[in-house]
Length: 343
Image (cartoon, rainbow, N blue to C red; front, side, top):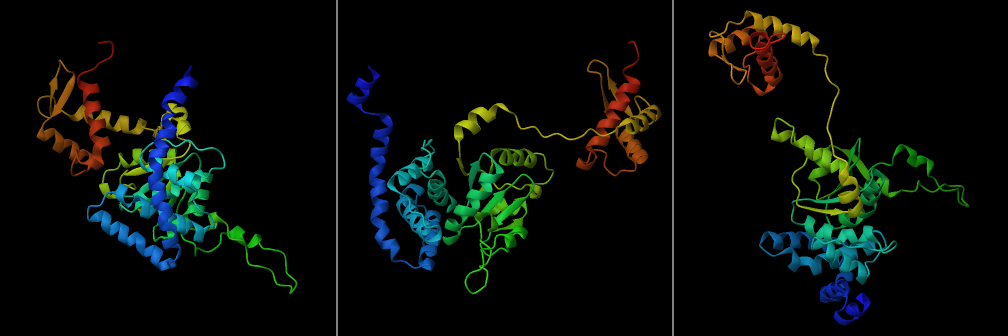
């Protein structure tokens, strides 16, 4: 029955893809023109597209040229050309939809198209993978395409951060990747792998790149940490404008069941409790503080605040740097003057 209706009204996915075909045709028409351009001329297109976007043109209007220039850059930088099915996949991703692609259809290459288009806004684009290995592999591999077009690429790892740089010195193990000696007795230089094309960077620098690769957990924890800082300057992320999520069903459904929790070891606070318990005994009700019996809270008077600051040798008890001290002081006073054993 369902097959009959599909034949009658057509498959919705096929209909949507047919509607996108004219865009793919526009991209294909630009290919002969872009093939004639030099490397610097290709890079100049990025500057032009950015300028046009800032002047008010929509990304949708810039899509054919952006996709065409990425296709040409990929052919030159990594020897890979986007096929029509990959162009359609890139259009789907740019539109914020889910694209299901079979193994071998080149998801990693597809992602370069909408990532580049959305990165020219200057607001940053994120590529989210399921593990550190894929994040660094894809950033090192596809970073060559974006680098050829003048974009910067960052990569987040669990314990480090990197910025794409094809001229970065080889890793220490690079010397081990040397080809056999040829007929002249000379050995070839070490083989350069995609993961060699990075230089160490801070997280803030990685996020400042036009495109940043990383895992869902890394992006999530950085967001949580940014919301815990005292000063805006200490935040590492600069916003969340556009992201491509690899294996979206796994990340947004399966792994979403596991919460991201930031925790740390508890401090030994026995000494603080004893110190503040002694302090609370020195304070006098109705002089240093007032008691609200119904709510079982205390309100420090100006004289009480001054007395505590003098005892603790701090300038401002309620300054952000003294949050813990004010918390201990108020709880100690409540314990001493409001609560009692067996009552």
